[in-house]
Structure formats: C-alpha cells, structure tokens
Image 1 (cartoon, rainbow, N blue to C red):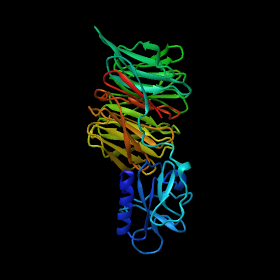
Image 2: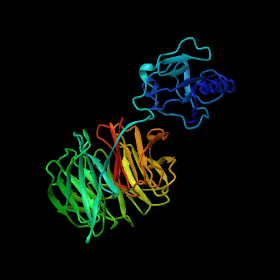
Image 3: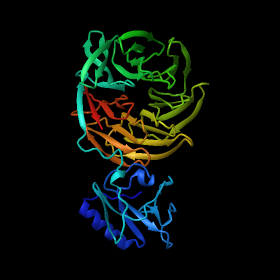
Image 4: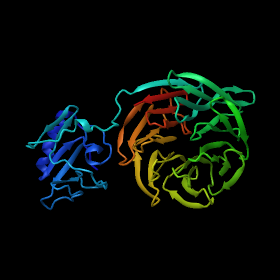
Length: 425
C-alpha cells in the first residue's frame, strides 16, 4: 500500500497533482476503521479512490460508486468494508473539507480511530535496580506491575529479585527474593494468583503475588531458564531453557508432564495460542516451532530468520504469530497457513522483545541498541506508526522486557540501566 505523509498544505497540493496524473481518482485523508473497516490508520494518510468507470487500475471493493485502490495498485486490502463513503474530502480534527469539487463530504470527526500515533504520551519511570530489567508482566485485574532482574552482585553470583509495583502511585509494594541468579522470565496466571519466575540459577519458582509467599521451587532444567508461560486455562506451566528443551509442568503440583525436544540451541521465548492447544517456541537455532500441547508432537517449523530468534508472541485471535531477533526484523506469520505474511523493517539492531496489544491491533517492539525508542506498528498492515522516546541507555539485549497491560491502556518496557518506562494511552 503506497502512503504519503505531508503537512496539511502539502497534502492538498499532492492530492491535486496526483489526481491530475490518475484520472478518475479521488483523494481522501485519514480513513478510519469505523468508516470503512480497513484497519486502524494513523493521521495524515492519503488514500486513493477510483470510480468504477474506466479500465485502468484494479477495483478492490464494489461500493456502488467508488472502489478502494492503493496508489501503486499493489497489495490491496482484503477486508470487506461495512460501509463506504459516497463523497471524499480532506478530514481534519474538526471535520471534513471537500476537495476536487465534491459537493458533499461525510463528516468523519466522530469516527476518529481510537489509537493514533502517540504524541507526547504520559509516561512514568520506575527503577528496579542499577542492573538490567529482564522481564516485565502486568497482574490481571489490578494496578500492579511485576519486574524481574537482580539487585546486587554477591560472593556467590547475582541475587535474583522480583519487584511488584503499585501503578497508581509508582510505589514499590514488595520484593521477592529466593533466586540465586538473575531472573530472566516472568509469567502470571490468568486469575492473578500465581507468579512464575525463571532464572539463570536453573530453577522456576512459583509465588503468591498478593502475599509474597514462595509456593514451590521447580527443578529439572540443566541450564538457565529463559522463558516461562502459563496456559490460558491456568493449569499448565511451560518453560524454555538454554539446555534447548521445553518442559511442560502441572502448575498446581509442579509435576513434570512432558519434555519437548527438537530445538538444537537455547530456547529464548515461548507463547500459547489463545485456546491453549498450541505452543510456539523461538530459539537460537533461527527457527520457531509449533507444538501440540496435548500430544507433545511437533506440528510445524517456521524458518525465515537469519539469526537467533529472541521473542515470539501470538495475537489474541490466534491468527498471527510475530517473531523477532538478531536479524533486526520482525516477521508476521499466518498461523492458519503457517506462511510468512510480512516482514517489518525499521530497527537498526537486534530486536529482543515484542508485544501485541490485547485488542490485536498494535505491535510494540524494542531495540537492543542505543536507539532509545519503542516502535509501534499496525499488526494488520505492518505499517510503522511511530516511536515512543524511551530509555536513556541501550535496551536490554534479551528478554520479554516489553508488555501491554491486560486492558491495553498501558505499555511498559525494561532497560539495561534498571529503568522501567511506562506509557499510558
């Protein structure tokens, strides 16, 4: 989809010039999903409409009087619109300005997308310690954020710590200690009653986040725990390790149910599909593997990354898998066909963490460099939406250190200097 971004004056001039070159085209600015069902689009986008008459171009949707096409007529949208505008114009924050002689324009002021490119978002910062923040998670149905890392270097190594923060006032609620090395991964049960942590000390610990009580210590991996996840039904815990295996545990008893083998290098990230039947795992062996949780069988292997895959997430509707890693790209896969659908490029260095908003519209990514930003993308189209000015130093080079809150109103990211940045939309 060809999109041009200009100042308001340049937009009008560009529209006129374009329409002089593309006869039978009309121009509209900032079309939102509420009007035509084409997905959330940021402000200042030019879309070209084509009349049904004439043979040039390729009509996409028959809306009675006009059809959508992109400027380049490449990669048309496939979603059918719920309705279509009969007239066109430039839409501003206060309404629509008719152009190109259109006598009537539908007022789209009330149809502004609910999520636009963020300008000066409200942000707060928390300090876990002076050392890297490796993991972040929100506790469901609460105003509590959990961070994992370590506090101090001891004679025996690093004292891993988990901290719980009250987001209403930014205060530290409690610190959970027990790991003898840094905490790399955190997962919260759907009911918010169990917190699982994975560490370089090769153990998984289960905690009551409300009291801080250590419930259980799980052992079985022979190397660092890089990833933990809890199934949507809250019954199963899954861990991924530098020992290249994935282990499935009963969350309540801590009993080992199954070990999945197939990766040839460390497993860096894992994610459940929303129905809990399939597990995705990402590895330094440059692959993403899909597993049947009931049988433990390998269903498919997704290849395409050219270096370590550090993070994998699945959309709330279970149709899209996003992966990212050392090759500086984010790849979007169709889980129905297991085919690569899009590659998001824009990061100048490795991408250690990605997250998808609860409504499935926005993908956020962090960069393991001195870029100091969090990038936002439209998950459906792959379009880059903008940067959030983030950390003062380089973002942590490994970890699920970025997360949306369950309600989608907050986004948090962790950093190598121990700082947690939080944005509220």
